[in-house]
Image (cartoon, rainbow, N blue to C red; front, side, top):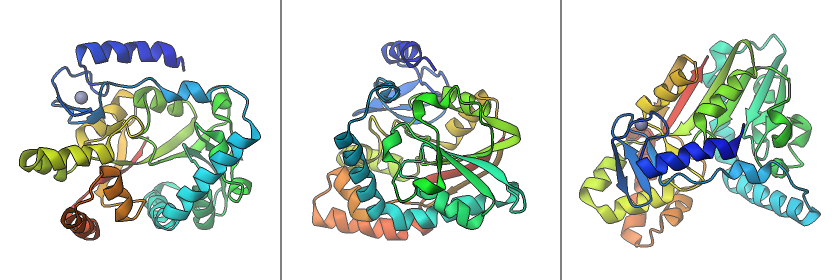
Length: 299
Ligand SMILES: [Zn+2]
């Protein structure tokens, strides 16, 4: 993928205020975000330069490697238990499409520390897990033996094909979701499928915008940034899948978090004890009252 060339189109979109998902021109801006009134996607705006370019080349020093390992490990210590449950639920969501009896090739795209392979192998002992991540050196040594790693820089030209590609909490990070889906489509075996789990907007966004611009700004600060570049809506999700030539086989909205509530409250910069208590109450009730995630299988 020629990221620089692709970014020139995003520069144009920035100038003309165009939705990068559906191409719609009716967008409203608020703080550092924009919402498309056609497909309802919520994006970090203006669109930022793709970080992928920085990771395509360059020698890694041993200190960079150990720093990356430390970051990855501390993330896993915080989120590993939640992720274990979440990953189990994700794999079970795909149960109808994966055979336990056959050897299958799977790809964990954007797999970070590599914990997913542990869960997948546990449920599907005949699965053969490959991992690729923009930051190769985040793959933790403890999970490395369960993952065949393809370096990010080599991925596009690698000829390996997969029965199932997993994108667990990755779709929101992509600078170019359409082009990435198209690239991954070329990596699938016949009848191959992609699983996606990604955050979506829900009632808390319009409600806070209506009642308190200050709290709405904090919510946006905690959920949309140059790393979490788009928070999907159902319509924008279907739009991008169809544009990339996929059909949505299975789709569900559910409640799912990777970190404890303090993490999100800190990210939002919420220090007021009453608001924090409200936030924690919301967090623990969220399985009953909110659907902040999309899970889907596409083909
Ligand atoms: Zn749109």
